[in-house]
Every structure is written in C-alpha cells, then in structure tokens.
Image 1 (cartoon, rainbow, N blue to C red):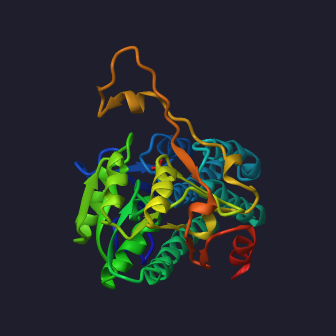
Image 2 (cartoon, rainbow, N blue to C red; image 1 turned 60 degrees about the horizontal axis):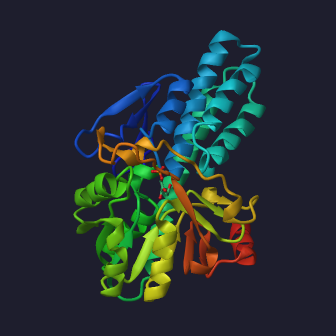
Image 3 (tube, rainbow, N blue to C red; image 1 turned 30 degrees about the vertical axis):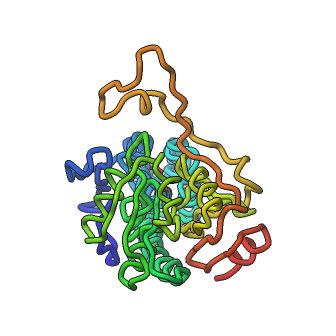
Length: 348
Ligand code: MRU
C-alpha cells in the first residue's frame, strides 16, 4: 500500500488482494472486507462499501489488477479480450463520478502496452493512481487553506475526506491544512440524508483528528449562515464540467444558493481527475438515481408513512456562477468559466 497515507485508509492492497474499509457500518464498526474478484469489487462500489469519487476510481484500478490476474490465469494468450467484460462491469457500477471512468481509461492504456503477465504493470499503475491522489489532496489542502483570509468556521456537506479519496481528503484536506494553520476554527457538518455521510463519516474523521465538529440537519444551513457562523462552505465534487459547473452530493446546490444570499464564500476542492472537459455543462451529466428505500428507511427501519413514494437523486448540479473558487492540484480557479477551466487543465 501507499507510503503516503497517514490518515484513515479506505482502500489498501494487502497480501495480493484489495481491502476496503466497509463505510456502510462506520463509525460503529471498523471492518475491512477483502476482495479477490473484479465483479465483487464492482458490487462493493455500487453498494457503497467504498464511496466518494476519487476512492471509487482508485478501487476500480485495483479491481482491474484482480481482473487481469484471473483472465491471464485462464488464458495467457487471450486475456486482453477476456478482460473487456470486467472493464464493462466496473464501468457500470456507478454513473456520476468521472474519476471511475478516468481511472479505468488509465488502466486500459497500460493494458494496451503490456506483453506477458500483466499483474505487476497494472498493480504499479493502480498504486500510482492511489499515491498521486494523496499527493494532489495534500497540495490542494495548502492551496485551499491559503484562500481563507480571516479565521472562521466552515460548513461542509457529505464526506469529502480521507474516506472518499486515496487519503487526506479534498474538502477535508483543506480543513486539515486550514485547521493546522489556524485558518479554520471548527467544522459544521451536514448530516447528509439519506446515507448520512456527514453524521457517520465526516464527524468520525474530524473526531479522529481532534478538529471540533458540529453536526446539523441539512435544513439548519440557512439559519446557520444567517447567524454569521461560517465564513466558507467547502465541498468536494464528483464531476466538474468544462464550464465549471459542479456535480456533487444532493443538497450541495442548495448550499451554494444560500451561501451567495448570505455573503458566505463557496469553495469546491477536487483533483484534476474530477474535471471532465468533454462535457460542456452540468445539465449534461447523468445523475445517479438510487433506490427509494434509502429515503423511506433509516438503518433498516421504515421511517416514512406506508404508501408514500420517494425520489432519490444522489447528486445535483451547482452552476459555476455560484462557485467562488475551484481548487485542484493544478491551481485555483476563481469565478470559474470555460476559459479559466481550460487554462487550469493545460497546466502541468
Ligand atoms: O454517494 P457518495 O457518498 O459517493 O457521494 C460522494 C460525494 O458526493 C462527495 O462529496 C464527492 O464524491 C467528493 S469526494 C472527495
């Protein structure tokens, strides 16, 4: 596994298998599940054992190592044709986070150049994707924290932390760096219905780090901002389109509207692998619809009236016009538009 991870590890490669920290049972249980099969890895992504855009991409990359091992064992001559079905299965696991497709494409490029046993080369590439993500997060942490002028509390949504990435986190990477620098005093975390990533995951990460964290129901955000309790909203992203629109966990758009109304700044932190310059604007991104049961039930217990239906889009689109800054490892884009996004992506 990577040398760089010094925060919680959502993903690790041990004894030639993939291990995923089961995020469905956190914070009550810390349990790693072991995977030796690419189809099971795809199921783990779909079922939210692992979640968060960069973490999904890294997981898929390790899944391809497992797929290549099995295909090569079965047919050393024909494994490149055989692995296609596994690549398709991984591609179909979740639709919105572009990091998944980006990582599969990177692995596909390595596959094209391999002769002989593919495992070592593919494992090296998966590790590189993993390590690069952690390095990007650390750099973004510094860049994002530098944007905060006066010490303040911040509000975050969902979980864009170590658990959602290779390590350290995107939005929570800025929190880690900003807290260490005295720029961020504390974190308000939306509990983030229906999966409760804020209550279960962000709160847990912050408590582990000794960073003061206060949970709130999403509906409290307007009141929080009106009272002047936060200086910034800081979130991650699952896909940023060419014009700077930001696709992120459902509820993010509402926070951006509220932030603009109340004079609170809005920062999006995501690696360049989350930027999709092939899509013009956020309305063109496929938004994952998840099971209504995730809304109707909580922890296996029905909470909604019998007979009620539920609508469960997992993500929404925040227009670029509501974003004050996009932070990537390639630099900061203030008031994003298509020219600024292109210039940032062209940087090394
Ligand atoms: O459904 P999830 O938990 O995978 O959604 C995750 C998010 O929306 C995160 O905010 C986003 O992926 C950024 S993670 C660094």
